[in-house]
Image 1 (cartoon, rainbow, N blue to C red):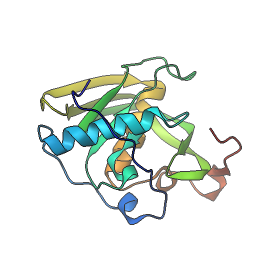
Image 2: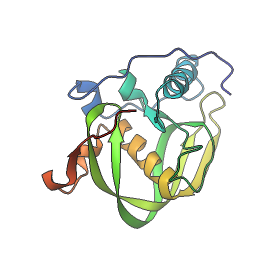
Image 3: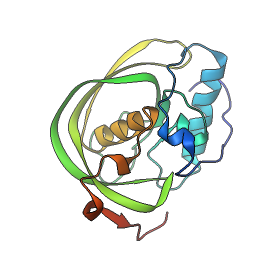
Image 4: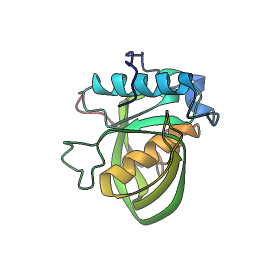
Length: 172
C-alpha cells in the first residue's frame, strides 16, 4: 500500500505526555511520514481488536493515523485500510453516544458522543494527494477518535463524566 515495509512499534499508554500534546502537521510526501504511516499499519495489524492507531500512540507527536474497521461487527461503511495526514473534520452530524476503548488506555472504556455522519479532508502519505472521505457509523467514530489523538485528546477527555467510564471487562 505505501511501498515500504512497516515496523511494529510499542504502543504508549496514558499518562505518557505525547498523548496529551497536539501533534504537528506533517509533509505527507516526506520519506519519514511514509515510514511512520507504514509503521502505524503494521502495529495496528498485530494488535487484536485494533481499528485505528494514531502517531502519538507510538510516541510521535504528528498528525498521522491509520484506520481499518474491516470485519468489525459494528461497521457498515468500510473504506478498508487507510492512512491520513493532517485530517480535518469539515462536516459532522447525527450525534450519538457509543462505547469506546483505546490501546493507550487499556483498563477503561467510556461512553462518548460522536457524529455518526462525517466528512473529513486530509492528505494521503506518499503522494500528498488531497482526499475527502465521507463515512458514517462506526468508521466515523473511529476517525474522530484518531483525529482526537492527533489533537492531544483521549476518549476520556470526551466522556460526560465519571459515570460514563467503565472498567474494561474483556481484553483482546
